[in-house]
Every structure is written in C-alpha cells, then in structure tokens.
Length: 135
Image (cartoon, rainbow, N blue to C red; front, side, top):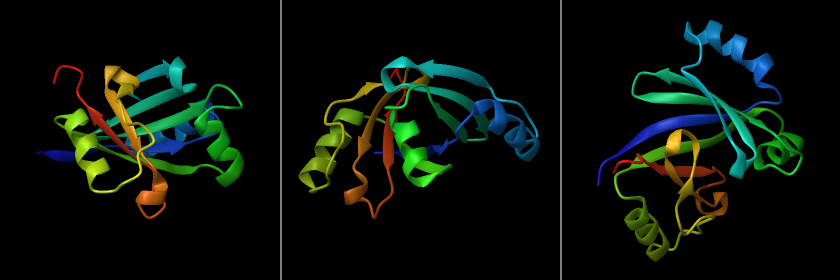
C-alpha cells in the first residue's frame, strides 16, 4: 500500500497572526481556508509540493486544537500520512496492536476521510491518516 506525507498540522492561537508569517516563510499565500465544524477547527492550507502545511485554529474552548494550545502552546500538532485504503489500514494497525482514536474514518478538511492513531502508540506523536475522497 502506497503512503506519503500528506501534511504537517500546526496548532496556532489565531490564523490571522500565523498566516502572514507562513506567507513570508513559504513565499505564497494559503491555497484555501476551511472550517471543519465537526472538529471545531478552522484551517489555512498551504501547498508545498507533494505535501502541505495546515495551520489549525480551534473554534471553541473544547476543541482538540484549543485544548492542545492550552496544554502545550503553539506548535506541531500532528503528522498526516495519506493512504490508499483507510479502512484496511485501520484494521491492519489495530491488528498490529496500535491504539486508535478513530476505528472508523470520519470527514476531515478538503473532504478527506480521516482517522487518528493515539499518541501513546506512536512515541508521543499524534498521527493522522487520510484518504482522498474519490478513492
């Protein structure tokens, strides 16, 4: 099964403050903005070749991003690996003994199917898996 680094998710307190900095760093503006109400997050997504940088701002105090920032501050929140068959990958990982946050894919930004692996199974790093919506 093919895999690739899809994006790096960076938790920020305010997109309005972070976007201009990343525009300077990356030499371009975001390709899109999106709000994922189910996950209580707003995103600014910068394409960077084959992968992306996703800036993430929580939209409520109880959102995962807001909780992360309250506990750890701004920074890299997760790595996302794109897979061809997310359901099959989740079964494989569960059979291998990894702890999953999501055993069933859910809708994420850009219409992707997403699921997360618990950081307790990945050396403390939150890992997201995603699948293109048309696959």
